[in-house]
Structure formats: structure tokens, C-alpha cells
Amino acid sequence: MGIKNLICQFTSQQKWMKKMRLDDYLSKFAELKALYNIVKHDFSIRELMHHNWNHILRDLARGVILGEKEGANVKIVLASVLLHDIGRLYGNGTRAQLYLP
Image 1 (cartoon, helix red, strand yellow):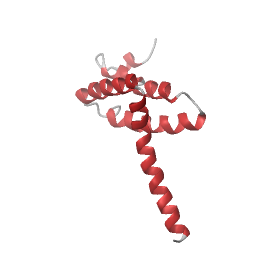
Image 2 (cartoon, rainbow, N blue to C red):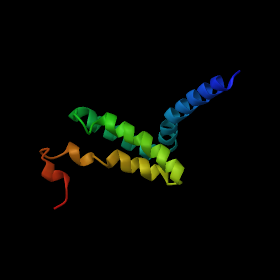
Image 3 (cartoon, one colour):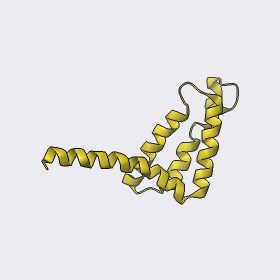
Image 4 (cartoon, rainbow, N blue to C red):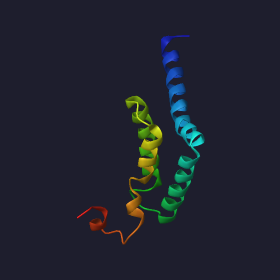
């Protein structure tokens, strides 16, 4: 097996492991899984154009990677990511409501 094949195999395993990490955290912490389900439901109902559920999923992936790299409490990081755009779900959607006065 050549070095190119080993690199490809390693890269494939890394991608698979990254996909599993979020599930591992959700399985480990029931309250995080509950929050995940609630936020997913609320974002799915609103069908926002930009700050939508796909945006949250991308940020969750980044949160796992950065949180682990920095030695952070990943449970807190993921809860923060889940809630970071929650204000966009409520109110009349004006830009003024998204910021503190």
C-alpha cells in the first residue's frame, strides 16, 4: 500500500470520526440532546433563509473541532452554539431587535 493510499484512507477515517463526534456528545449528555431537538424543531418551523438549521449544524461542527482543540468544555460550547442565533426565531424580524441598545 503506497503513501497516497494511506493518506486517502486516513482522511476518510478523519471525516467519519468528525461526523461521529457530535453524536457522541449528544449521546453522552441527555440535556444537550434535548436542547438540540428543541432548537432543531424551532428552526425547522421558521424556515429562515440564512441563519437557519444548516447554519447551526455548520457551527456545531466548528464548535466540536475548536472546543476539543482548545481543551474547552465542549458541552458548554455546543449549548452556546445551539442558542447563539435563537433571537432570530422570535420577534418581528427587524434588524433592531437583534442587538442590545
